[in-house]
Image 1 (cartoon, helix red, strand yellow):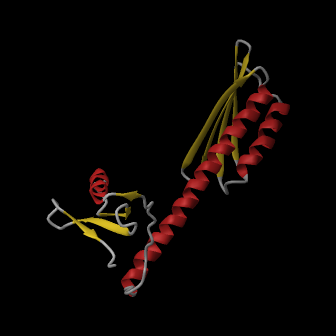
Image 2 (cartoon, rainbow, N blue to C red):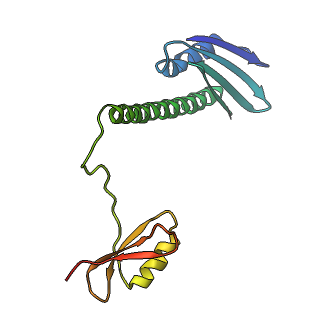
Length: 175
């Protein structure tokens, strides 16, 4: 890792330099080639550490202040490590999801699936009158049907939207 340490109104001692390099090893383990710009300064009684890390086209930044410069550096490293882990996790998740989507698209091009159950949906079936089921279905414009237990018969029924978009159908089991 390439490290540039700058002190504003503060002399960078060998001890601080070594400490920053040692702490940045925690960040370096995440990347093959990274650059860090560290700016250390004092404002009144506060010791401020500002660290920029650039790696793999990504930029990470942390700025903290503390009464102790070493504590401020530690906080920055913790913040940066959290940002890096979060970004890596997001990228890995996107790669996994992306590869699965790609795989599904490729598979459907090569072999059409027929006569197979390819999706299962679960519904909460509640006892109600068919008229109430229609009202419930109207509350959910994206749904095309609603399964329910008919309180009059005690059997599972299904209310569905008809193609005309205005009326509904009722599916009942035979006695």
